[in-house]
Image (cartoon, rainbow, N blue to C red; front, top):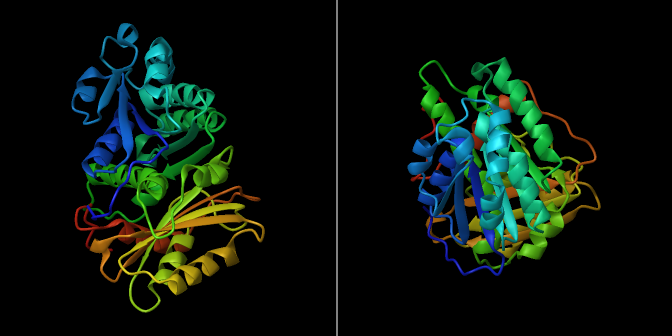
Length: 347
């Protein structure tokens, strides 16, 4: 984990992991030591919930499921969340920002996500969904359930980041294990939350506060998120270009009306930051609200990391084809640090 300083943020941020995938992602975030966040795990499976490392763990639908899970039944997952509504309200109370993270297609995550998000948004919290869409190999039924869950969730969050797991599969060869593929999905969920939260909780040369983030993400709908890295003479520009490649998520940044980006590095200059900003401004909508922060990270050496969040699209289009596979290769490489997952050797 990189050594960045941390000061308490006046904004209270909570991350809620729902179901197996959501709880796994939260445990990963706890281990990565993301600062300034309260982590909450919610699940119908009492045994799986027990191994979560979240500070607060809530068993959903204790009477409905008796701690045995919902067997992939999203209707039962919804019923379990309704049963535990008061506990969910209590857990969310006081939050300024709530992340709802889950794997769509399963029973608990799909069934409970919309309820949890609705409670969070009604409380006045800025509510951001960060969810995965199933791998195709998980079956037609699971993908249909996921589609329905995403549609239900979209209207109950301010911003929704959807991560299609099949994009990860495009770069897996015959030696890649199923377990590894799911770990990559957890890793991307982690980066989705980190990208937004750290621009508030980690102090920098140029700071962003909660009001900045809220201006970009309030009632914004679908969002685009990416991370780029660069080194050498043109490192900041290279990082911006890599982030703009839109390698993983469902929408293109072109035409975005709201952009938040954060640059982290050891010895960044204002000239570098300005050049990176210009690369981004040329792509997004001419009247886009572009805000950014600069964070000093002593562990990054000559490397620069740029995290980009874009919202407010005039058009939404999905990237497909061979070009996308090449861009995804760059994205997976950009996720790697010494403490993170190893990128397969074929990359």
